[in-house]
Length: 139
Length: 181
Image (spheres, rainbow over the protein chains, first blue to last red):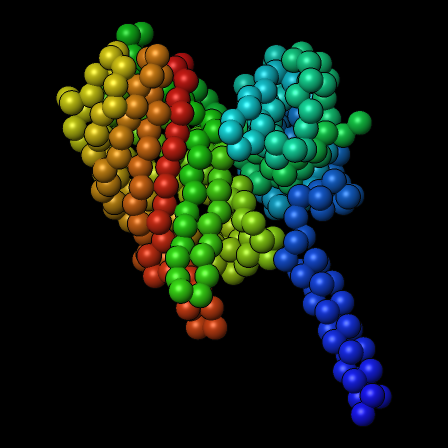
């Protein structure tokens, strides 16, 4: 009888572990995945803007939903109650890169407008700017 | 696509010199679906909107992939199975404020607005009319509206296995804070 209890307990333990792993992998796969994942492309801000301006459909196929690193100049940043937006733009470009960060993902005190900056995030496409979200700063 | 950029800036800056347009690049659009089984919401804080106080023209454009869900798997299903965001990466609204004469953009206050226009979603365009408000604080307008849409109207098919988890009519909320241009 005692043996059965032991088996049941072990089975329950395994069940809980499997559940927790599944939960973590399937449902909680979130922002931290951008930080830890390898970027598929690393590119200059002007270059990716130019690509979108030249052929949006082709560029969508290349970058949409992918983790990329973009380097450019920080023109401005804005804090809202929910997130922080950084705007990367070269003086010579009409468009820029709009990057959305979770509030906990960035320390505003390190930001200096006019300085070069590297941002890693998921490219969601192009409206009047190239848009990236779930961003983190790259060293 | 350079043409589109030039067109955008023409829309924003051109026209007569008196005309002033408002632009928002970080408009907040979110949706909420409620059923007994599950509540689902997702937020997009990177929608672009242009508001022309002279003509009442109001436009929104957003990237479908910019909607963020709490659960990553839901976001994946939303993009791949329902919205097919690789095929239809953008959604838009193009319309007009029909009671423009009741809004004084030069005077701070809260104004009720009626907006009619066309929503394009999942490659389907439908006419819509909704009420909303424009709040003007220190000369800057913020537009807010809430309305519902039905996924089936936009050819978004929901598999029967998750039918009970996704509402027949989904509530859309808009909150756009404009800067003058």
